[in-house]
Image 1 (cartoon, one colour):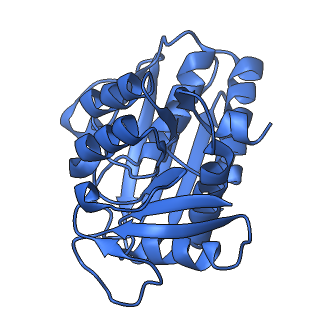
Image 2 (cartoon, rainbow, N blue to C red; image 1 turned 180 degrees about the horizontal axis):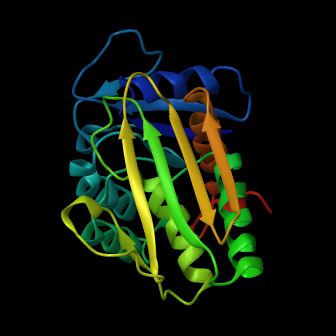
Length: 250
């Protein structure tokens, strides 16, 4: 039985995680962390990660990038595996996560959906087949409450494509401020925010007289919760290091 600590337990994703775990017999939530205690959790909720009195095998984080330091320190000091599902980290924070993995096991991916990770694999294959004769654009769409842009998933897809071409591409986020032609070595990344869109990602390969489109549409947050819980169970007893969906879905 995997014992889980859930940070951000009283938020939207926290409640979805609770619902998923309640239907499984291979894991349980033993404690939560949130500044807002909704009083309807079946486990103790602490306002700070430093107040936790329960031992756990893994911590699932769906909170806020500002809490990263304390979460990484908790993982290192207690040897608890970390499943980091919060988005919006800057490059410095990503480096912190990488460094922390030398002292505790860390599962980090921009998207916990099986379908999105398949999309990344298909995009890499498309680049391999199409070569440099196609322009690449990524469009991501999310609800109007999402703070970060572009999404972590859009960057993950761009990184997957870029790795396939030895990181020769640059990312273009803001063409409206320029008056020049599109260059060949760029990936355009565009963010749309509106309504209650859970998450949609589209990769466009535009060539001479033909267009190839790969896309994924999330219909509920549950797909991310299932992936995060699967990751927590997978991470039980893991040695220090960085882990991601490629190991989980083997």
